[in-house]
Image 1 (tube, each protein chain N blue to C red):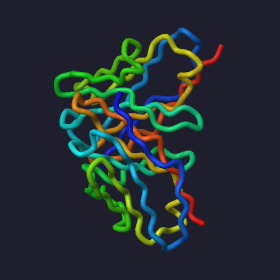
Image 2 (tube, one colour):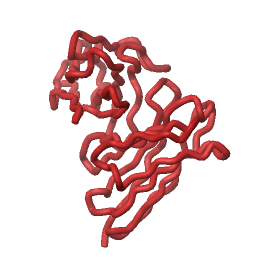
Image 3 (tube, each protein chain N blue to C red):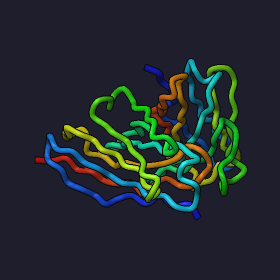
Length: 107
Length: 115
């Protein structure tokens, strides 16, 4: 079955840049979505169709792709960005999958 | 304003079935696939499946195949998730969502499976 890989955790100092990666063999041909989830809340869409910022999302969040790896970049990290981040994509049959999630800690 | 409002929490016994609803408003229901996601306590997000409200076609994750049904009622702009043969592993929050920039996820529905 199709799988996505994410690092379990990333630590970053305030105002620095955090890069969260997501890898999968099918990613060159598929859109990727990124979600942020804070404790006790429903996930929030950050990026859709790989690099489109969702409505109301700050410009410091951006998405990019290179080969089989996609990256969510948070430029100028703020304390409020501490959360779990999940990537999502689909395979050629239309079956979707989430990555295991990356916990971002702001030092 | 786009909203996805889910039905309330339920407690079920092992072996039972559960049906959760997700009523949408603020956009054209038939324009976007409606997905369901499971999140067990302290765990990540698990994609369960989707329905195309326009024609009722569905795609399910292999993990839930044979035990899940997702339907859509265009007369009430409501999607439904039915999960059968529940076990304690199904204790989780279930969310409905669209993957495009349409609106926020549903608020989540907690299903507790316990004898």
